[in-house]
Length: 206
Image (cartoon, rainbow, N blue to C red; front, side, top):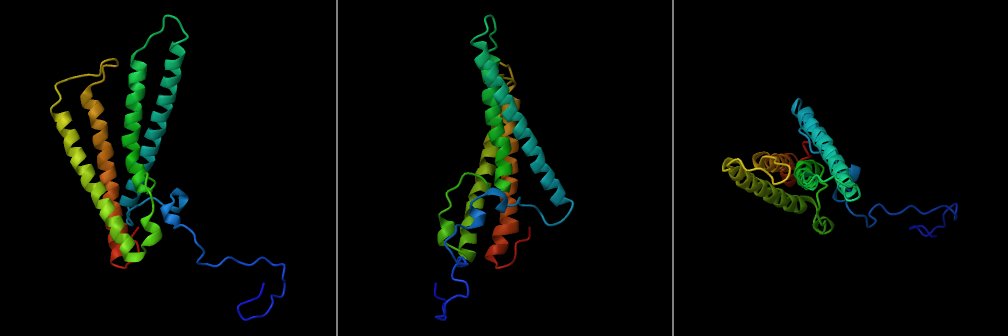
């Protein structure tokens, strides 16, 4: 292959390095380990927020195990005569819902929530930071509104319980409040530590 200056390379069989500006998707838009957890720069807040993320992981894993165990038990009941536990399916469904809300904040902290990254390929710099700021503002306001609506359900509860497992609805509806609060907190961190500094042209604070 001919060099840019018109000369042949010393070793024609040597592989040609790919250009630095090859068409590659932004690493931060694909999730995975390239997306570190959004954390405050100062202690002890950094350790506290990281510990919250670890607790979310543990609770999410436990709920997944509960779902697996209860679903297997539900299938086994079909083949074991004389065994009928109607609360099994109900608790499994609730565990799935709880796991969704509990892990929402963790996924938001790592920018691993479900998203279609199209703008990342078109906009760059401050324009991209502005779009991400607007997205996180929408997430923050949505979580605040849903927190208020869920709080109204808990506050107006009259002592109702679930039909099979008889779990108080006050507890059932309290779990989403925690999930919305943690997601709103992570959206606020992204806004203050990432989006606003990027718009102002400063380095990320976290």
